[in-house]
Amino acid sequence: MIKRLFRKVFGKSRTAKAAGKAHVIPLREHRVARDGISDSAQRVTDGLQAAGFQAYVVGGAVRDLLLGCKPKDFDVATDATPEQVKRVFRRARIIGRRFKLVHVMFGSETIEVSTFRRAMEVDEAETDAHGRILRDNEFGDMEQDAARRDFTANALFYDPATQEIIDYHHGYADIRAKVLRMIGDPEVRFREDPVRMLRAVRLAAKLGMKIDPATAAPIARLKELLRNVPEARLFDEMLKLLLSGHALACIKKLRFKGLHHGLLPMLDVILEQPMGEKFVMLALQNTDDRIAADKPASPAFLFAALLWHEVLATWKTRQAAGERPVAALHAAMDDVLERQRAQLAIPRRYDTVMKELWLLQPRFEQRGGQRPFRLLALPRFRAAYDFLLLRCASGEVDAALGDWWTEFQEADEARRAEMLQPDSGAPKKRRRRKKPSAAVQAELPID
Image (cartoon, rainbow, N blue to C red):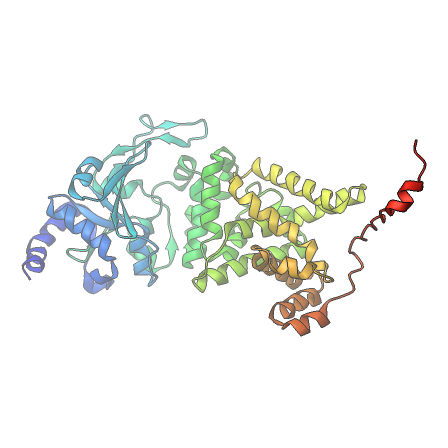
């Protein structure tokens, strides 16, 4: 009771003072109550405020709550330095070299706490020849921190103590209008960080928002700047896009904006092939459906699907040149992955899974003898089977093949025996030469 009274009396004056020029939106208007914030995030903001600091839930969590979505995680922004944050909480650790953050841990949940940052002046920031910012991390105040963020929808601060939202850039109005708008000059901001072009596409698709025309206008002429982005960072953004739960819509928007060229090698070529496009779209829809059903989605499976038709084409070319099927498939996989790495840094830890999925596909054709049983027992069978069903649905292989394997998995032993086909492809057993008897050996001539 005393804590609530303290917040009501003193919290508002603190919020109004901190907000400065911002628009302060009360609970009765935005209707995002404190109980929508995770207990851990509340404990972080309460703890920092009790220690005399400003502290707010910020960014995507506030945006998602306003849109009626459940936030994936909660971030907190504060005027406390990382060292000061660490002194407030027992289980906290400072991370990062370029700009220090603090991870505050409560059980399985980790709250990321950042200190307010400011956008440096053009002559202060370190940039490359294209205007991309290389280093500009400086502490600032809340207003400067809001200005430094990318889109107005991501620049909202929520105070759990007063249940008010602090808005410096009309982000609340943009969210209600479902408009994604860049803070500042879009061309300058895209040059500072070209990945923002991908982020705009991802957020618009994920949130069902329209990209503001002024924000979208420079994308077509600045898309080549993505080639200057470090591969690892580009991969991280692509992974977020593909695992957003709205991958299908994202890819369509990427193609519409012309941003798919060069991100995944030959993706633009694949999308122009009727069978390849259908297969890719089915794979993306399958991933979206799994995420919507709260099932795990494998990045390796998705990348294997995106690159499959390039592997398939290379495999056929090598076989036509006279290479044996298995050797040709191994070589095709290596060729495609090597070309892929030149554009997007897919970590090698995914290679094993991708190759297993590809290598198992020809084995589904073998439905005689013990081969189906051995395939069924493999750890990666289920993922490879799902991959096969995508191939069937796209028309690459006969749907009857997928139906056979669906039934074979569920059938009893008697039915499985009936389903087996003649094992014409099995290698012939070598006949062992019968060892001559001792009597015969005694009559053999000695050299």
